[in-house]
Length: 159
View 1 (cartoon, helix red, strand yellow):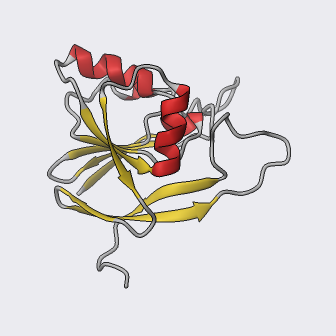
View 2 (cartoon, one colour):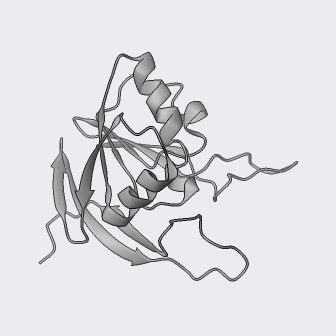
View 3 (cartoon, one colour):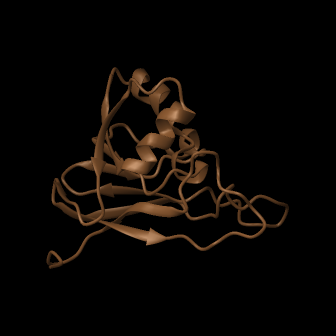
């Protein structure tokens, strides 16, 4: 399995003079299939070196994790791909369907905490993880206060 970090910045990246210019957090996984964890608002820049993609895994409904869904559609169309499996928690899928009008490129695959998936050689286990309460910022409209599909790759399945 090969992992390539496409961004490691916070929501909105790390802008500003003298800063690292890191892009929003996203991970490219090569495990017999090409997986992308989170489609950020920086997807256009993050996808330049990528030629193919087999599935997307979304961790939560905030814009830093799924704000590039529209860019993903254009990227897929430019490669002649009509639809792509998109694995996400039910709350994340609901929020996407409220936020975006054009999701015909997404073949939604709902997952629930404790759900297991085998994608290529990657064995994935979905976890629900509470997000830290925010006092200064409000979550995006329709966003949950929980990460409803945090992906883990355990050596052995829990339970």
